Length: 158
Picture (cartoon, rainbow, N blue to C red):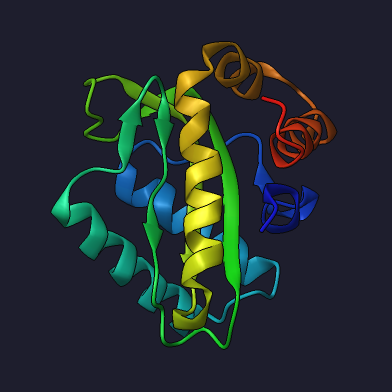
């Protein structure tokens, strides 16, 4: 599963309005509704799944990166859905390093897409080791530039 297939240009929010973790997740799921990928009802179910996962431990993995996610979403027919969101000021996310989060990848998937879910999560988590790319994702003004980074990751070059 390729990042560029999940986080397409229409699934990029360059300037989140949210100022806290719950609002950021909600805003990103609303984006899936606005893009006709989920209904309002399914977005609420996805939010409950993500919040359940967050209650087990924050998905703010440090260095300004968070990956709130829910797998085995029985309400999804199939596949993996995702939204890339960015906050210029940063959002308190209960991150492991205590820092603010500027880059958020929301990932939800159906039960039959567990392998693809893990592939996406692994690729995104690898960004944690690449501070230069994280800074670029936090600062670039163009969605196309973000997509180029995703394509490089997909091709195996960070």
